[in-house]
Image (tube, rainbow, N blue to C red; front, side, top):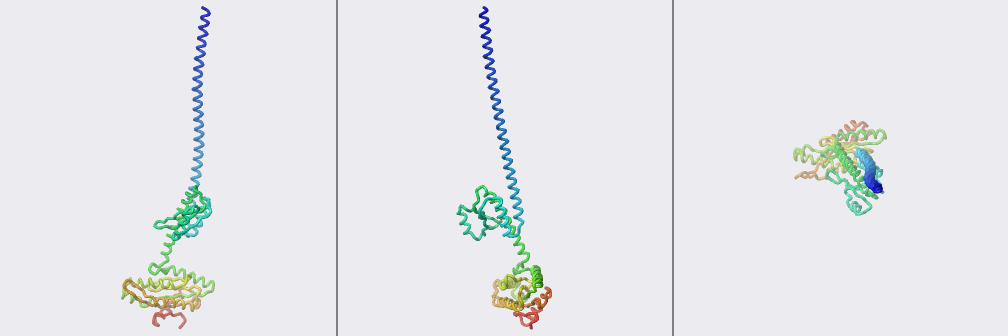
Length: 338
């Protein structure tokens, strides 16, 4: 009986040990699983942290790039000259993009653009205005990654070009008589005073031509004001075609024109005036259903012989013009020459 009890107790003990081992093993397995999950979660958090840091760095770099492009845009769009705008664009492009060469091609040079488009060496960007193409930018040796930046900068350069062209057009409108396309009286006067000061400073010669269309009132009365406008338009064209690039032509008022001839003495002024007089006399003006010819009378005053003040030269050239009309029109008279 005692032996049986001992065996029974032994079996019970073994059974208890077995179940305890199973329980401990199961609990240990669950604990290891939890440790593994926590470890995985920890590594995932570390990875997320690294990803967030990388994303933050990328965002910082992108923000810096955008800010840089914004600053570049401000600088480029400040310029009012096409050459300056391209030089600044080229400089900023080289600071932000790897390239070998950058060219600005006018929209008229389509053949050059076609050749470059077929070449793998060049990346060609079209610069588009509101209504027409402004030209092209051709970049040699640019990598694929930098093309987006180049396109953004080229877009800003196109805006700058539009602004330059608009400014030029506005400036031209402000200083150009809309009918004759010569300078307005105000702008002509400014340039005249500048040339007078230059003449005084350098002790040079300067001549002033006052030009008036003969019998213009009769033309207006006979053919109408539209024909009169066409006559003035043609006279403006004749004057522009028969003066030098350094000469300054303007519409003084009504049918009266004036031309400043820098570095020109009285003999040279007579030669220039005769060229304008003869070209006018031999030109047939077509105005709507009318064809006619007109003549001009021209008065000349020269500095410093006839005076050095602008108003004095204008008065004396006007006096010479009056004398040319009194002597029969279609002629040239110089102040002080009888």
